[in-house]
Length: 477
Image 1 (cartoon, one colour):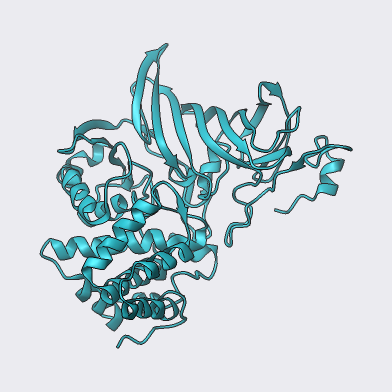
Image 2 (tube, one colour):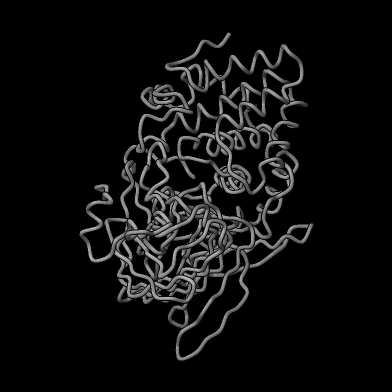
């Protein structure tokens, strides 16, 4: 995600209380199963996600009318129970649920804040694969983050844009809304004829009937909910390919087409450069969604198709495409691990500049350390507000220490182990955790194991204490 500036930056329902409600999520007398947890206790967003199951696939069928802002949806969720379940939760903010079925049978449900509590007609056995279908409708919400930024379902000049980091996806579909549970997606969107509906992956079908057009998009590789997207508008669509045949699918707001043309033409070259540095591209297509500059406040690494508010600069394209490796393929286990996304994507910018006749990564590091990088002293000092692996709260996970100081950690690793070992580590990391989840300890363990010499290993161990977890500005001998 693009670094946000400071300017844009439930009560728990107990089992006893639920027994008093029309629908109990606690299981009746003699029930063998137990309810899944109503959150995964993320360090910063404890109520996001849910326990007791693992989603394999989302099938979303959506209809949207931009004039009335009315959304209708059917979500078919295929999941595996990780324990014997009498009930389970999905995350859904706002919207009205009209019906729920589990394994083809009507299921009882109730709402409690962002929780949709579902009780199947029959308990779900541990290891059982089940299908839940939720029918819903309403006006999807725009959500304000802890840092003040807008996400969820955003109204645009001619349609809508869905952005989900960190919690906004539950504004337009029910799911297990935490990066720890990735799944494949099929997203079908029906809109008035003349509009385009763009999502992740590849377009498998486009049909028009009775004045409305349906676009069906397929994402086979696992995707975290926060990088799922839908963009609706009068986009200009263009598909090209890399030299290796990878489809590059761009959707551009006509107002931004002229300004975007030159930089989007660099996509194939940027991907080739990133593959050389980070390893094979992890998805089956790439591209961009370029919205109007007033339609969103920041860029986001929506999977396979990053979203930009207006025509992006090349450095931003480098950053968001780097996220396809760091964040989208290798996805953090919790939001505390955000620096693994943003530190690497920011360092990708430094490397790109180094390789394209700009400042070296060392020069960028030195400018940041000396406080010469930004004109404003306050911006230079903000880098040292907290350690990158320990954001102070939910509102700080997109603050400068996660980005710039995170990138400085990556550079210190390169400095400690040397270029050959560094690039082996980076490419080995993206290969080992391809389409998986990883946390900071997974990363530090991996680096130590592959640092090379005992001397290099000792150096990187010192980096963790001083640069990754240490408070304040570290010494830089």
